[in-house]
Amino acid sequence: MFLCELAFLCDISSYLDALNLQLQGRGRIITDMYAAVRAFKTKLCLWENQMLQGNPCHFPCCQSIKAQISTAVFPCAQFAEKLSVLKLAQKCKFELLSNPFAVDVENAPTNIQMELIELQCNDTLKSKYDAVGAAQFPRFIPDTMPQLRTQAAQMPSMFSSTYLCEQLFSSMKMTKTTHRRRLTDEHLRSILRISSAQSLSQDIDELASKKRWQPPPTAFYRIWQYAQQASQPQTTCNHASPGPPHPASSPLGSSVTSQPDS
Image 1 (cartoon, rainbow, N blue to C red):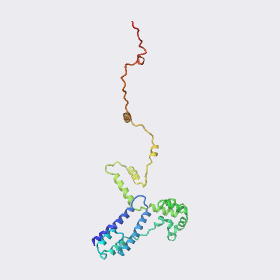
Image 2 (image 1 turned 90 degrees about the vertical axis):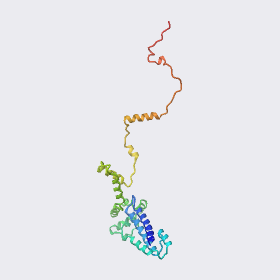
Image 3 (image 1 turned 180 degrees about the vertical axis):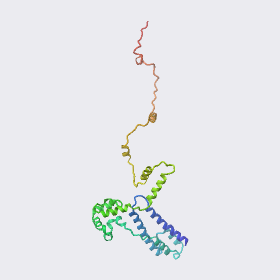
Image 4 (image 1 turned 45 degrees about the vertical axis):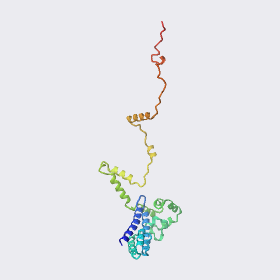
């Protein structure tokens, strides 16, 4: 009996772990979270019905244990009851903005029924929804549909999970330590704003165009010149050493005159 329960625990924990990973990460809105939870609820209903029939086909550990023991001993009914406990009974209205073109108008709130009909009959907005998706579509709802715009603004502002909050506090804890006590609130606010940004990419060309080139300090500039000269190849001369300079080339050549022999 213990091995059967352990096998069931391993299988259901793997599915719960996969669901937990789906609910994490950046760029996830609450409608995406609800879709993942709703899919998991549907899977629970399927698993419950299959367990009642004695068919744990989606539970590999349970299948291996069932093959080793008698079918009558394997507690399929008990596991089906545990699966029914996991099912959530929460009802939500997230379908309205997860796919507004598939919502039944009669079941929608009365204050948005007229605008919802106009939205579903607009082929341009339907094409825009297919192109950008549910997360970006609320930006393209026209001003002539104020009720839908209000509903669309409320959904993305809801925290779908505590992932971003936990990540922000972890980043703040690593930034402000006992060794960095001189950080002010303004510094900490700027650091956290950059670290918690959903998407941030640097534009090096634009930043460089706003800066003017400044010559380096004298000492570093001389070191740089010396390094440049040292990196250049040295040329050597193999001819004989030159003799004394020609009188014409001497600085005194113009004042020295030759005397005739006596």
